[in-house]
Amino acid sequence: MKKSVLILGSGGREHAFAWSMAKDKNVTKVYCAPGNGGTAQVAENIALNLSNHQEVVRVVKEKNIDLTVVGPENPLAKGIVDIFITEGLRIFGPDAYGAQLESSKLFARDLMAENNIPHPDYYSCNTKDEAETLKAILELPLVLKADGLAAGKGVIICENDEEFEKGLKIMFDSSIFGDATSRISLERCLVGEELSVFAVCDGKDYRILSSAQDHKRAYDEDKGPNTGGMGAYAPTQLLTPVLLDRVGLEIIQPTLTVMAERGHPYRGFLYVGLMIVDGKPYVIEFNVRMGDPEAQVILPLLKSSFFEILWHA
Image (cartoon, one colour):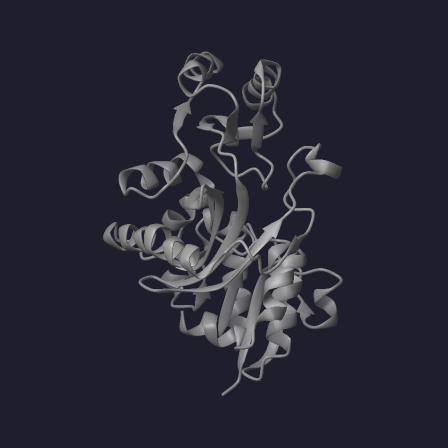
């Protein structure tokens, strides 16, 4: 029997989801909430406030939706999956505990450190004075990361003292990132090739969809500030079969194992942002959803059913 699908979100990622689902032989109807002009061409948009989880649940029950797919990170961090599980509704995405892999950079860093998952050296900082003191230990260049969610923009790379001081003012003295910078992760800056690997996880096992490289800086020649993503291409030839095996064995599988041991099996997309240094992968960041713009270049490559992958996971 064909199924109906609800996609939560309003970006290009959600348009890619809707496009994939609309042409899937297993799907009879696609809804998007709130959707956008692109999704309106392939699905039915529903005006919903995603912060109102009970209203989303009401619509799912009213329209007999079989599977809900969460696009952006905020509903995941705020526990929409937990509510769906309590209601006995099928949803694809991690619970609020698992979503901390993205919603708290320091939660993710601590998990990696405790489980020997390769990552850059880092320190948790609550004040500018702490960061100043720790700078002498890690040495420039350094990376400042907002601990909380900052729409993909809460990262400042500091090549020199002037950039470091400016970065600290942005993190601690301005309101640009709000509560996301109540703590920051001060990290050693790794130099290498950056790429992203995207996996679908069912709590125990995983399947890698593809790899991609995106372009985060706003201006030409990587001169501007970080954005949520200016564009992407997939796959990347940087991800060799040997490197892919290492990412699975040294990063993805250990992450799934520890989450299951903590009583929160990780189900959902796992976006692994990597820096390749001398052939070794290091985790720059975890995201708990598909990337935008990466979804727009990865999903058209899929030969199998996008619906079936998510349904069975």
